[in-house]
Image 1 (cartoon, rainbow, N blue to C red):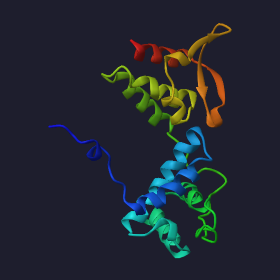
Image 2 (image 1 turned 135 degrees about the horizontal axis):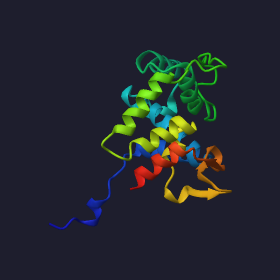
Image 3 (image 1 turned 120 degrees about the horizontal axis):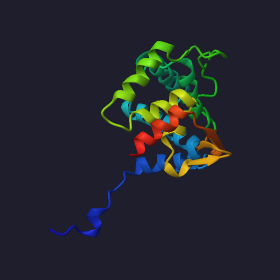
Length: 195
């Protein structure tokens, strides 16, 4: 049965179109990973608005206070992610979040990461995995200290040699590119995953 051209396009309700234009304009000022993270944080807010039958463009301060409480009490976010998610709402002109009290974010991170034995257990489990590609990302994250988007955003073209050392080209925040020397254990992990 043939599909008519008119039925191939999804009709978008007018109220969604009203929200899409400001969302597109807001996201247009960001690039790369910053845009990806900002879009994700904005989606969380828009889904919350939909779940609470709230027009995001008509949100008042009390609504934003409820959103912050939801992030803290229901989603159990720590102060730093709550503050980051709130910054997306604050970023709009005449924002209803202008005077909303943000959670205090400590200057020192309370996240200590994995302990020595925990990391040893993680890397051993990845090394013994039946999937040969499991070990490489754990090695990249744990032994090189890469951010998750840096580790996942690479491919074999990013590998090379510089001054006799195996290196990996890493694209960081803002599109900055650096060459990171690969310790032998990480190089072996990558080679094992490529086979």
